[in-house]
Amino acid sequence: MDIVIRPVEPYEFGELGEITAQAYLRDGLLDFGESDAYLGRLRDVAGRAAAAEVLVAVEGTGVLAGAAEAGGAGRVLGGVTFVPRGGPMADIAEPGEAEIRMLAVARAARRRGVGEALVRACVDRARATEGCVRIVLSTQRTMRAAHRVYERLGFVRSPGRDWNPLPHLDDITLLAYELTL
Image (cartoon, rainbow, N blue to C red; front, side):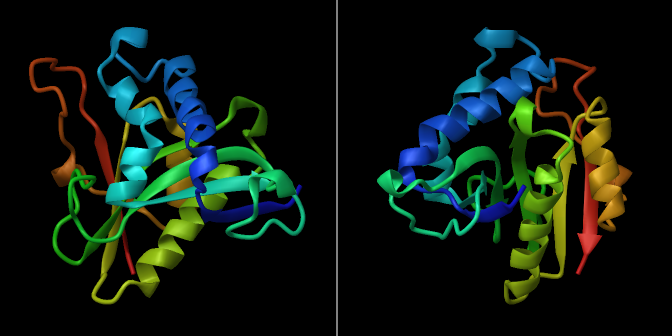
């Protein structure tokens, strides 16, 4: 399978939003299921794209950025939000750091290298960002397959940066990883 990573197109916002939401729901990563407030943020690809770079993984040969919807742009397999320099989408990035957010792969596309390709694209973008010395991300304890991908690509745990997005719930600690460029 050819996997092409490129910026998401507006006509793909809904599909990628649903892939992201379903990945988090089906993997039990949301505390309150369908009523979790974070679910709306996961589905809001347009909002993310306005504040950061959203990359999409598509299947197909000859898929190019800007391909017309009617031209068969390829099946959406997953996506990720890349935050090159702080802003409203950054959770833990400090000056000189980029951040990876909301990585998700459609269930049917898992174990095919899609997640790794998306992370590699983010690392390449961070390396190309002037003044960027590190790329960081947060992950849940149960995301073991993702941890293996991060570690295979050279990310290391950064326990001093672990954090809780919902301080009123003690058991929601996100693990931090970082890669020095």
